[in-house]
Image 1 (cartoon, rainbow, N blue to C red):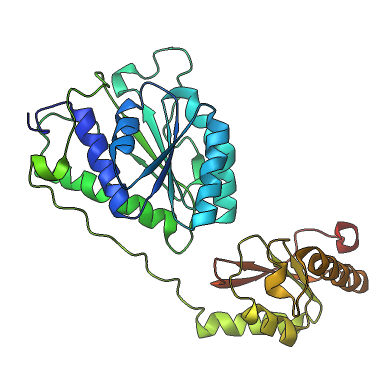
Image 2 (image 1 turned 135 degrees about the vertical axis):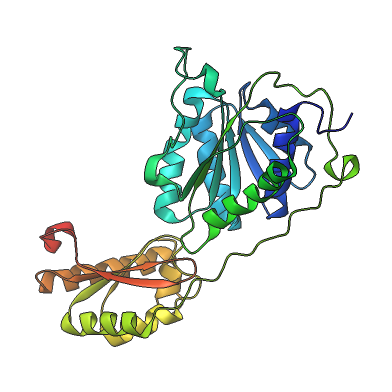
Length: 319
């Protein structure tokens, strides 16, 4: 049987998973559930994607977050329909705040079964609000899909990966409605069954360097505030040399996350020792000034230095 005439859910999920795999997605974390069966089976069958199964979605969300942080690559995260996907919210918020690429895939009921009062069902459209870089409601599976629709599915994975790994990495959310039957009637070999070209790997554009105007604005702002503070969050640096040069010229102390101290301190200091020294310098500096300027270092590696006004009024209390 041609996959175009078989279970459309199986075809949809297989095309989408192939699209993700072609863009370098090598891990998926899967929560238990029925509505997500097409996605679960498609991921499990793909030879280039390692599937990790979790009963508890909250734990699975943070496992995916850790995988993406450790690998530096986007990780897929699958849930069944209803309230299951809401358990990913803490991990999605963390991914948004720290710039970690996650691709959240929530299975959903078809439109005719929504708002029916069934147990544990919710409105999943834009479930994560503005915590994601991109949301998309995937088209319903169809029998005998057009070439245009097949091409849409082929490119959807690339669009999701680009949104998750572009200039401002973070989570994306795809909502996928499926009608029964959810179980496949056959297995699909996309390349052997019909003429299916493998999607082309798309590489996100490198972050652009600050413009001369932006550099002048930052320079003027730093020169106008001789007392300031440099704040480095986790995963902000791969090479601290640029930051050390900035620190030297600005005369600002560095407040570094424990994972970054080795990158922003000169000399062979342990993370604990380095963090103690950094905190001591910050407290000493804060005690001498009224309201210091705060400098955040964002990106992995450094692709932006953001100088901003502090959000608190009494830095001495804050320190």
